[in-house]
Structures are given as structure tokens and as C-alpha cells.
Image (tube, rainbow over all chains, first blue to last red; front, side, top):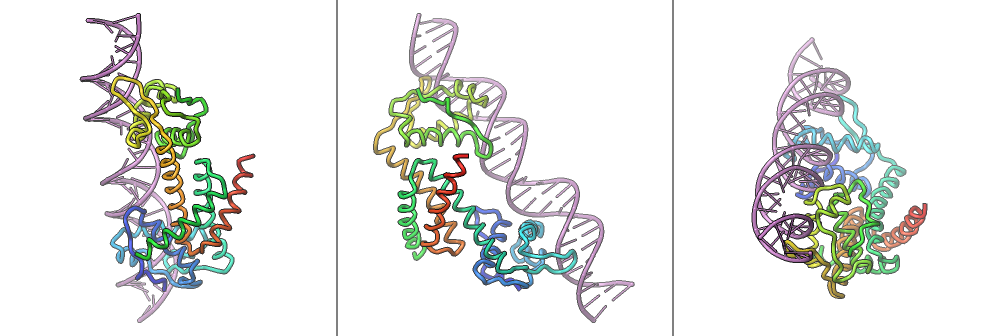
Length: 131
Length: 131
DNA sequence: AGAACTGTATTACTCAAGTAGTACGGTTTG
DNA sequence: CAAACCGTACTACTTGAGTAATACAGTTCT
């Protein structure tokens, strides 16, 4: 059973996206495995104090990605394999990186300076998170 | 006079932000200089086929940043100096980079791989833009 | 079969962002 | 001073995203 005990909703991002990302990250990190049973829409929504359709929105997107399988009336399960996980990992990274490199270029920065800044910021944020 | 002839609005981003970024990038790139006169809200809005208040929204934000100066009834002018431009450049880069490094870390990637991917994507996008 | 679950489709409510309409008051220039 | 500009404040409309309410249909298990 996919474990939602560590899931905490936080303001600033739609709840259905938080659920989506929680499962995607779990799949990439390996804490969620192929064949794992998912809590039902109703159970999870009650747990989070939200509407079942909000959970459904996340689950539907996951199904479109092929990460879960739902049969009408029955429970839903994760359907992961090495290829899907690898592909998912790449797609998560790709979306993030494309968004940033585009934004950075528009400021007129060159690649070398961009890499240098990212190198520096990476460590600065690591420090922030320790506090 | 700040030149908007190369300004094209495109879907997917609010127009007032496109105007804001156009001027900020112009200031950083040096194509917009201190003392440059801005087109009036009405003139620019007529040029773009939008409402004067949409232009005003961008200009008000620029004024709050100290990049332009507006006197009620009179025209508006750029108020730039080296410090402001440098600060603006850093703030643009900072926002972009923080957003990306945060997103990347959440996927569980390490710094070395992130830098390698960005290095690669940077060149790939350059190719895209040539087409 | 029937109770208790499951997923799903349709519709509607809420809220904030983006944009527009309108009116008011200040500045400039003849 | 008056016409023609200018910036600005206030209000209202529109749209889409996010979420919820409700109803329907399929599965499971005793």
C-alpha cells in the first residue's frame, strides 16, 4: 500500500499537483514500487480533508502517464518498470531545466556564468535547508 | 524614447508581465538607457491594442522597483544607474536559479548531474532557436 | 443477491488573475 | 486660460484553475 503518512499539504501549490508529485517522486526515489496498492479516492480524500474529485484529478493524470492502473470498481495499483521510472525521471528533469535555461538566456547570461551561478546556489540552498 | 518596435506580445504570459520583462531586459542589455522617455500609457496601449490600465500595471511595478519615474500629468522616464542595473541583473538571475535548483533537488538529482544536464540542454535549446 | 466498497462522469461553485471602462486631477504648451 | 495631453484611482467584467456536490456504474466478498 502506498504510504501517505509523510504527505503534508502546503499552501501555494494545488493539492492535486502535490499528490501527483508525491507519487512521482516516490516512484523515482523507490519508496513506491510496482504493484503497490493505492488508497481509494474516497479514503485518501477523507484523510486529507478534501473532495474525492481532487484526488481523482491527480490519479487520472498518473494513469495517463501510465504510472497507475485503475479498473472501474476495483482498486488502483502502481504499474512501474525500470523504463517508465527512468523516463519519468528524465521528464521531471527536462521540464525543470528547459524552463530555467530559457529564462536565464533571456537575461543575456552565457552558459559558463550560468553554470557557475547554479553551482554556487546549489550549495547555498543546501545550507538553508539545514537550518 | 524607449523603442517598442521589436515588442511582440505572445500567448501564455500576461501582457503586463511581457511589458515588464521587456523593459527590464532592455535595461540589463543596455538597449534602454537612463533618462530615456517612455511612451505614454495611452499611446503604448493603443499600439498594442490593449487597455491603458494593462500598461499602467507594468509601469507601476517598474516604478516600485525604481526603474522609472512618473510624475502625475507628465511623461515617464527611465531612471537607471550602474548599481540598479547590476542589482536588477542579479535579481533576475537569482529568481530563475533558485526556482530551478529547488525543483531539481526535489527530484533527487545531485549537483554534478544537474550541471551536466544543464550544460547539455543549453546547447540543445540554442539549436532549437536557430530553427 | 446484496451490501459495501470501488472508479468515473457531469455539473456547479468559488476565487483570483488579467484585463477593460470610466472618471478624475495634474502638466504642458500654444 | 484652455485644449490636449499626461498619470492615476476605482470599479467592473471575463476567464480559467481549483475544488466540490452529486449521481451513476463496476467490482468484490460473504
